[in-house]
Length: 344
Image (spheres, rainbow, N blue to C red):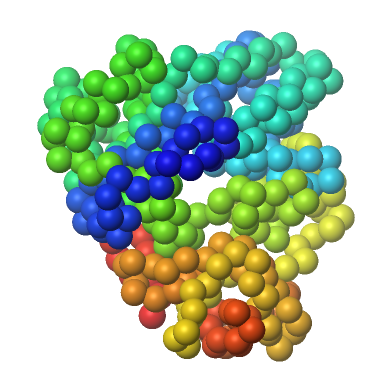
């Protein structure tokens, strides 16, 4: 167990490698109750979030639909990355990171005080979140809870259903299919035990990190923070600059533009593992590994890295690992999605 955002979290329950493979091949189970649910409520909820988020909640027209977005500072840095769910015009739900929850709530409250929109921001500390992920995740979920199948089987990616006081969302952080289930904290232990009894394998933070990195998914605090633009963190696809909508940080993004490439690395040489903060030497200057690990699926070391502009997929670069310069190939993330290796 380790401290993670103020929570005691399991690194692993047994073999981290076996937990990783269980998610890629069958179904793994993650207690992610450290994530904070925030209810944004009131007649001005949509207008408020249109200004607060870099992605455009105008896209959310059907109840239950969700989108991934960054919330930015005035200077264009990333306050946090989050998922926003739409249920009614007066009810949106945000799920934010544990380590940034207090900062996020404070930031949203400041924006609310400046806004003409009438909204409230309500943290739901009475809720827990469990993610069941993998090619057989939904099947195992329905075996345990057949009564929820009718409401959840039609869900497409980034969609959620409210069933009583539960929310079942077809989202995740592994690159595999599955559900993230938000439910009362009083019910979570029995829910967990039932899924484990049904064949889902508990997985800890270690497997969660190797899975998300293989899937090319950013981790706040490593791949981006409030000093890093989403344009320099591979997140331009989450920023809506096409519409005329104004949002916090837009002017800074437009004036600064993109100043770095954010790409994957596949280690070619033996003798080390790619880790955060290692220097990357390229023909255009030095970059830095933001997240790195050994990939159980590929059997090789992989990384995400912020590199000088002009660095391209296919380039060979050199990563400084314990005073050695090891060759790595620049690739486009993700490395693995839905069990399939996408880079060689």
